[in-house]
Image (cartoon, rainbow, N blue to C red; front, side, top):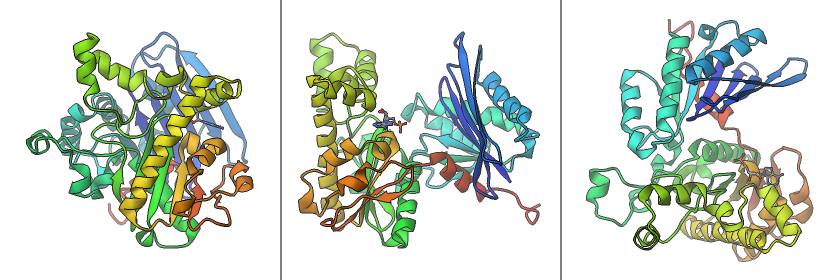
Length: 404
Ligand code: AMP
C-alpha cells in the first residue's frame, strides 16, 4: 500500500512516497525553482537494504505539471512505483481550511471549490496547493486524493481565544479570526509525546513549540489545541526567520503615513525582511550562532529577542492551561539547537522547568526527555514528521477490497 504525500508551493513541490505496510519512506524529494531557467530536482531513494541514493538534477522545469511528471517519472525509473494509478492515496498538504475543515477530507469538486474560497485568507499557499491537487487528479485518476489542512487541528480553539477585539462584523462577514498553522506538526508531536509518556493524549496538557524557519507555540489541553500563537495568517506570534511575529498593529499605519511605504511594501517587509533577518541580517539560526560566537552584537540581540518572545508565550500558556505535563520542542531549531532550548528554559524554574545540561546536548534524532532532576514536568525533544502524519491521516480514505 503506497501513499504519496505532496506539498505544492508556488515555485516548488515537496514529496514523499510511503510504504504504509511498514511505514517506510521509499522515496522523497523536492522540485525547486519551478519556472526558472535552472530548476532543481533533489531526490532520495531508500532501498530496502538500507542503501540511500541521493541525487540532484538541474534542468528547466517550466511549470507544476512538468514538475509532477518529472517526480512520477523519477519514481518509475527508480522502480519504487510502477504507475501513478497504483497509489492507494495521495495526501495533499493544504495550508488554509478556514472554519470549514476540521478533519482530513476526501477531495471532490465541492471540496476544491471550498479550498478556492479560502484563497483570500492564504493567497500565497492555497492556489499552489490547488494546482498540485488538480494535476494529481489528472495523473492518478480514481486514486483517493485527501486534503490535510494546517489549520484543522486548531479548530478546537474556543471563541474567546480565536476572536480579535475588532468590530465583530469583520469576523461574521469576512471570517477574520485566529486560525493557527503548523497544526499537523503540533498534533503529530503531541501524539508522540503521549506515546513517550505512556499516557492517553486526552489526559495530557502540553505546550508544543514548533521552532523552524517559521515558528509557533500551541497550548494543548486534554489533547486539544486551545490556543496558538499564529493568527489569521502565519505572521502573528513568535519572532521567526524572516517574519516579525507580534508587533503593535499601529506600526503599519505609521509606516504608511510617515515612510511612504505602500501596503505591499509593508507586507513584504513584515513577512520577508523582518524577524531574525531584520534584526541581524541573517535568518539561519546556525549562522546567527556563528556570528554571536564571533562577537557580533546584533546576532546576540537577535538571540535574546527570539528566546524572550518564546518565554513570554510559555508563561502565558502556563496561565491558560493551569497544569502542564510536558513542554515539547520540535522543528529545525527546536530539535537541534541545545543552546536555544537552554536559553528559553533558563529562569523558568518557578514553573517547574529545568533542563539536564548533558541530556540537552545529545543529538541523535531520537525522542528524548531532557528534564533535569528538579523539573516537575517533562521537557521533550521530538522530531516532527508532517509528511508521515499526512500519510497516516490519508490512510483512512484508502479503498479496501471490502469497499469496492
Ligand atoms: P525548519 O524550517 O524546521 O527546517 O528549520 C530551519 C531552521 O532550523 C533554520 O534556522 C536552521 O538554521 C535551524 N537549524 C537546523 N539545524 C540546526 C542546528 N543543528 N542548530 C541550530 N539550528 C539549526
